[in-house]
Image (tube, rainbow, N blue to C red; front, top):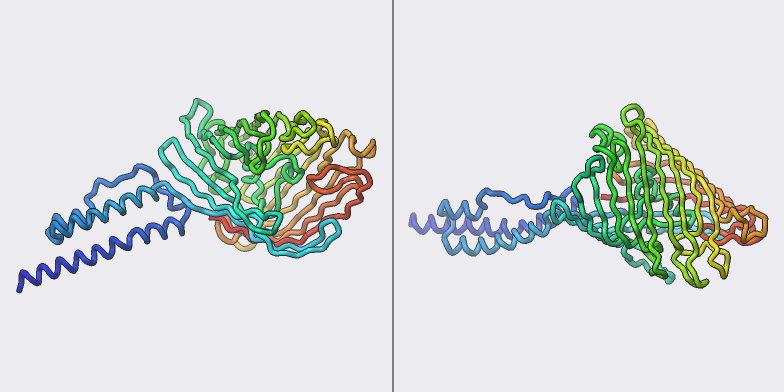
Length: 438
């Protein structure tokens, strides 16, 4: 009886271990999906401690037969954990409700303006991978996913003064907009100045390398101000791309080099002060007139950040655009553009300083040479917006804003060619949008 009772106890304990073992994969999978990037483990970390199954077998709680069965299950769990090791899953989504007037037509609508699903995997100490599809609304009104990012990221060692380097191969970040959007946190309100003007977007097929000048800024600065592009003396990013952007076929053989250089001139005295230059030099992605039009951008920005305020001021001179559409019709003569933008944000002493007030002003002239308006150069637009943004959880915001775009008489609208005597009415909107990001 004692022997039978002992076998029964061993069997019951083995059964409980088996049931726990079967539940583990679901638990780990749930933790991975729920915690996203925070769940990403360091690759290659393996424990030298004996497993629970081995310990139970050594203590004679499991028979040899029970041990072999559970060891086979352990192998499956090990493979699952290895697949999850270094893996992160997250999202950045904008849930928008806006109402206003567009070219004199009133509207109000709910909209999803961004729906990233980002999957990243750390494969080795020097290699990572990322894929990010994004929501887009097609001409039929159907929401679909299209590819925004897909690249392998290589992490070379520091090279003297050049540190924290990363190289992207595939559909990756272009040098400018990701940098600006980590200073101006309100991409959920709308695109940044140079993209709103129709000159370029944020990603393209190609290869690039970026890094810091010097060591990273102190942990205190990164915690209280910004952890992004936090090189002590600045940061840099250089790449070569197809040129048309992430949602365009390559229409010519031209490749577009792009560069951003950012200097932090007074890292000890004024650590949040940065001076940036961005330039690209290529051809627009269009050959319909027989040759691709010129496509260049020269942009400078002064920015300042501390724990209370953010300020940016930028000025750009452009020629053509990435699509090759900013041209005199039926020619390859690119339009010359010019514009500037200011942005300001401050934390209000409310809701534990999570409530922000922001304001922005853009002005852009797409045709400074007046080629399309016969000497009458009134074809600029002015954009103003301001509002409140509540950071209610980490990278999650609730924003309420008012925006107005005022067009000169020859401006036919954002990202459109000027046309004589268009007289487009002002566009305006009241916007509420929630950003969910993890």
